[in-house]
Length: 83
Image 1 (spheres, rainbow, N blue to C red):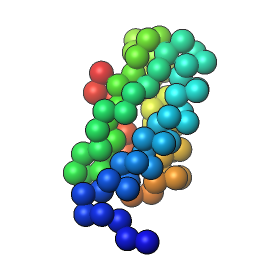
Image 2: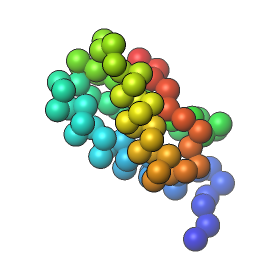
Image 3: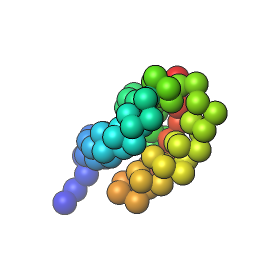
Image 4: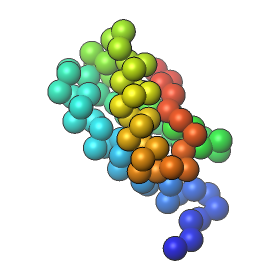
């Protein structure tokens, strides 16, 4: 299977993983929203609700969402909260 040059297949897969991860953030009174997949393969997300101001938000992104994304979409470079 070939991947389109614009990365849309990667973006679709990233969105699916973010949707799966939302259950985790929603269980803690927050949420996470996919914003963009940059050309450098960094995933931009926005934390909402309780997650937006949580001191553990960076940990949640790096140890939770980023690890899940890297396992399912190894093409990504990382995850960044764009608040």
